[in-house]
Structure formats: structure tokens, C-alpha cells
Length: 534
Image (tube, rainbow, N blue to C red; front, top):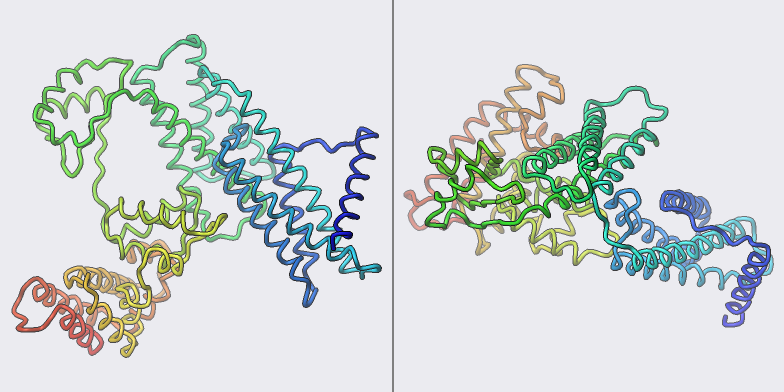
């Protein structure tokens, strides 16, 4: 094996020497060209693997390592604007992944070097793997060049840098428009917002490199970025779950770049913030700031953060902040809004979360957003490198909750009237030391209220359209609509109303009503029995 490896290395050195003599060293491609090469080679490896039974484990390992590397590249670069380099830490991670892929490719090529006359299929795989190894060399060179550029890079100055970012994206939008007639409302809205942003940056450029944006100008630019981010989110949400053509996929990638651009600019503009008062509701003399807010300095942005409290709209501070600044009210999310929020939050972190996994995490965290953020960060640390999708199994393993014995699973078994499983799940839930009857009743009430609304809709119109279904099943991912079709059959409108009446009774009992010596767990099992017998 050592001799075989030595022969391959000698052949590669000979080829490199010949290329150098003829001035034929392959130029390092840019990021977009490299992405196309990687995708092409992944397809070539897949084709070489097709129709081959009992192929070598070395080839499968090499293919898997190269696919992991590609996912890592995609995850790293999708967060970058055009021309923006990865951080030194990201480059080190990519280099390590390149070396793992190179080792796997070498293992396969060394094994096949002993084959004197490989068959056509084997030769096809050897050729594909050789091309992969050549591409990995280019990736190593590219990462090395990027490290040199980061060492020499000087701090960026002036608004021309931000204007260049915007212009890059406008060119990307124009390129993604080729061959597509028209466009969605969100696509046109983002185009217009980018043009407005470019005009503003040009206006600030004319005022000189030392010009500092006023608070009002900063707010206006931040509002543009906020609108851009929301329009992109709507566009991505509309495309979710649909089969997209290659051109539409290109548009989707471009829109993700626009969102990264908006987030990046928001972060840069946030550098103008000089003062942030957290837990401002605890300040005794908070109202005295009304005098400052009446005539704030243009060079300063003051942020007052009130946690768990609302500003008194009758007082001068609120009125001056509304007049000369921006007042943002962030109301607590409702329980049915949590799963969609979790899906959106994971998307902002570059992850896709399965609907049942989002529902499971929502059940665990309730409406505590900080808890969800903590658990998501924990997931990111524990999941294998390059993971892009979170499943219910990942939630069970890393968060420490069981999908099999959860309220989420109980509502499902009740929908299908699966009595043995529903009673088993109810018993296990009731035995949990963290079990609280009011929370369980609340979740069941929400579930049966949706069944009632959906049943009423289907009585009115046997074949409602998707918009009407979404309104009736507010907060429910379309992935679960099939479950509610079964639930409506098992609990028509009258029975759904009886179920809600029953839940109101057990809500009273669970909060200290006349229940005798029955435990909360006993009450839940009793409630489930009665729901199944409706």
C-alpha cells in the first residue's frame, strides 16, 4: 500500500512539474466558479455510484466526505455578501474539512492503483475521484489566498463600501432576472428598496468621507433594511415546499443574499448606538429623560429597553420618544404562534427544522423565547458539523424531551381516536414531575378549538381552499392538515363543542376545584377517557 501511495504521489508531482514548465498552473477560481465546480463534481460522483452494486466502502466514504464539505461551504458562504471573505475561524474549519475529504479520496485511489485493468464502471469512478482530488487542491489554494488577503486587509472606511455592497446585490438581482418574465410582488419590492438604498448611500458619499449620519438618517436606513428583510422572509415563505426550477432556485439564493446584506448593514449601522439602558422600567427618574428626548443629539442614539412592562402613553417621555424617535412594542407571542416563530428563527440561523420538531420544541419551551434561543444554541453545538436540518429525533436526543409521551403526541392520538395509545401517553404525561394540569388543558383546548373551526368550515364548504383552511387552522403547519381531516371526522361540530365544554370543567378542576383526592395525573387520564367517549 505504501508503494502504491508513493506511485500516485510521484505521478501527481510529475503532472504538476509538467504544468509548471508550460505555464499551465490552473488559476484559482472565484467563489461562484468554485461553487459550480463543486456541484458538478458532486453530481459526477453520484452518477459514478449509480448502477454499481456492492461498491467499495472507500468510494462511499470519499463521496460522503466531499458532500459534507460542500454543505459546509454552502453554509459558510450563504451568510456572506458578494466579495466578503470568511473569517479566519471559518477558513480553518474549511481547511480541516478539505483535508478529511482529501484523505478519503486518497484512500480510494490508492486501493484502486493495484487494479491492472479496471472495468468501465470502475474507471469512471477513478476518473471522477481524480477530478475531486484536483478540485480539493484548488480549494486549498483558494483558502490559502484568502488567509493572505485577510492579513493584508485594511479597515474599510466611508459610505462607498456600503454603497458597493448594495450595487453588488442589484447586479445579482439583475442576473437572476435573466430568462424570467415578470416577478412576484416581494421580488419587485426588494428591487425598489435596493435602488432607494443605493441613492441614499450616494447622497451620503457626496457629503465627504468624514460625514456622520444623523439619528434620523440612521433610522431611515434601518427602516429600509427592516422592510427588505421582511419582504425576503415573505418571498422565502411563499416558495417553501414548492418544486422550483433552476432559475427560481437561483432567485431564492439571491434573496437569501439580500437578507444577509440587510442584516449586515443593520449591524454596521448599529455602531452608531452609544447608549442602551436595559431594564429601564426599574429607573426611578426615567421620566426625567423626556427633557433630553425633546431635543436629542444627532450623534447619539439612545435605546431604552423596558422588559415585561409598557411605557405610560400619557406621560411626556412616551410622547417625546414617539415624536422624535421610534417606539417599538414587542408583544408576547401566543402559543399557536410559537412553532412558526421557531421555524423562522432556525431559518435565520441557516437551519431547516421539521414541522414536528418545531411543534415539539414549542411544547417544551412554551412562549419563552429566550429558552428557545438557548436550546437552539445547544443544538448547534451538539449536532454534527455541516448539519442543515433539525428533526424531532434531534430535539429528543439533545433537548431531553420525548415526542412519544408529549401533549403534541396526545392531541394526535385523540384526533385519530386511538384509545390505547392516547391513554398510555396521558398516563406517562401525568406521571412527569413537571406536569401541570392547566397547561395540558390549555393545549387540548387550542387543539379542539381548531377542530371546531375547521369542522364548521367543512360543513359550510366541503372543499375549502387553502387560504380558508389556513385561517381555520391558524398556527398549524400544512404538514399536519391531514391529521385535522381525521379529527373533524371523529369530532364533528357538536362533539367538538362538547369537548370544549368538558375542557372548561377540567380547567376549573385543575386549578383547585372539587376533585377530592384525585391527582393532576388522574384528572388528565379521566379527561382523556371522556374525550374518547364523546
